[in-house]
Image (cartoon, rainbow over all chains, first blue to last red; front, side, top):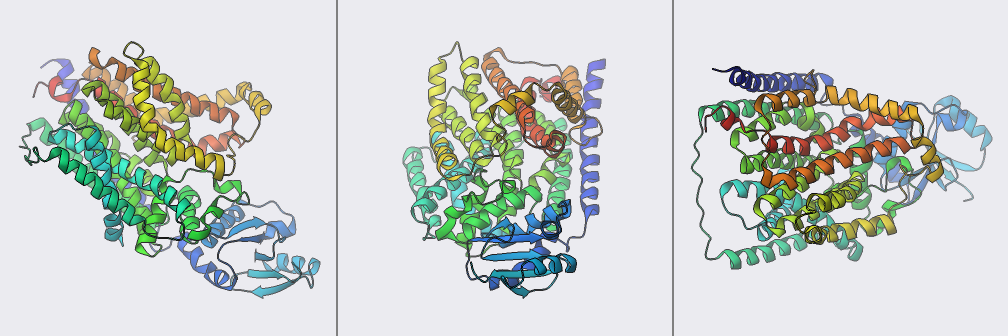
Length: 141
Length: 458
């Protein structure tokens, strides 16, 4: 048996063994990544159901406020992620940053809400919701 | 809902299969297998394109399934009329040698592991990976949740971050099946991603089985399925695997054109390239690189005729892409820097170094086997010997040139990206390599000696 033939057989055996080994490793890694019942996107969907019910339209534009918008801090990765998740959950309603629209969805902690409330006193009807969420309706659009 | 989603996609896929058969009436089981996997892409692609037109005309109606059923019925009639004298089903006689049995057994285990990985991803992330839900499934929701106002999905007010300019192939397919089912279920995009995984792996294997050998096809699939490329990336519901499928289909059809000399194959190649552009923005670059590549590769064999057939297939999907980009989609952010700033960025040497370093590192580790697939394939080619056929030289040249030019195009996009370059590279380079790797695997295994011949067990 010549050397090339041996190398060819070794190569094929190596590909089969490596394919099975790394396929198994990949499956193990995929299983280890996380809980099957804990999808954050699905949880986000549930969180925003009440907001969608309160809005008087199915498609339109609403404002979106986060702590960083009110406190003047730089939006962190979590803030951007939550904005993205909220847009997905609220589709086909378009979220634009700020509170310039007739309706605004605010996701603010108590400090940020107090700050925002002081500078916008009397301009909005505030509908408080669970988990630091507020739906704001501008009184004079 | 999983089976219902599959059932709703079925008439479209069968219509695709019939379109492929009417344009390429080759017989034999090996060819039928290739047609089946090509038909899946043609079917899903035509459904998405036609649904786009349907929504433009009748956004208040939800009868698109009947359009697909009528198309299938019409094509079935044409098929029966043409094939009425040849309608005979000859079952293939399966006979494998020992080498093929060993390779197929290994492939079966690897396939099961890959499917289990995909199922795990689907269960863990039913909405898909970040890009999938943010862009493609979000687009489907915008279309489905308010059909009469669906054109609002492309409002300039949507944050550019969400890429409302991205083509709609996946979004339209998900949305129209939701319309038929009457509810929004994540099973539909999951089924769609599964169909593309099957089509991609199936086409790679079936086309190498047709043009080379079963053993060669098995080795190529072991390299594809034995990594996380299909099981994880395909199940993530992003558009990169469907895009890779359309790149692969175009390459396979160009190769088959040189092999069988049927103009219908070039029409299909053009259609598949158009569907690549309807799937992701990189597909538009793909069209731009295929045109000069085909002209140069067939320079001595009627290049204008080759381009003519190709453009014929390209015309319909490209017209839809053009209409969408020109009249509906907001501007793309990737080209948002303007010409002068782009030239400045392109002349910055440090950007070239950063891109080349990252690309080199990715190519040397791509595939997740510790050693990258490129060194493995190089060693494989040296051990098994390259044996290109002189008759197929235009095909090798065309596919090689297309993949090379596409890679150069990606390099150029990195150079002028408005995003932080290192972030953009880290975020996307693995997926860009995947897009080109699958058609490259096809090219590679059509040039290398097949395993049965090399081991003299044919």
